[in-house]
Length: 118
Image (cartoon, rainbow, N blue to C red):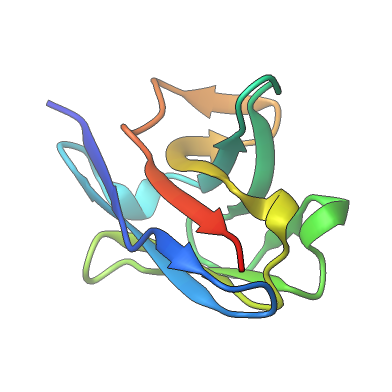
């Protein structure tokens, strides 16, 4: 059974940083690209970042370029999202999913809440 479990969310002040983790199981993790998405109330779910199966290629949404970094550890079956210079508009539920833009597989994980507020 495929499982994607996000963790690491919480409350952070504007300008702060936070690192999210997505622990994967039930499939051959190293064979799949992985992506992070987010959704805020009243907004559609949107892509944040994606990383190739090897970790050698990444892509980012314009609104996070230079602030967020996606990475993965295939030995630990985990993908990470390092977030810096956080803004209130980054407040959302962040979830992970197998795949790359245009080629996603299965559903998102349950998500972890990130709140950026002073």
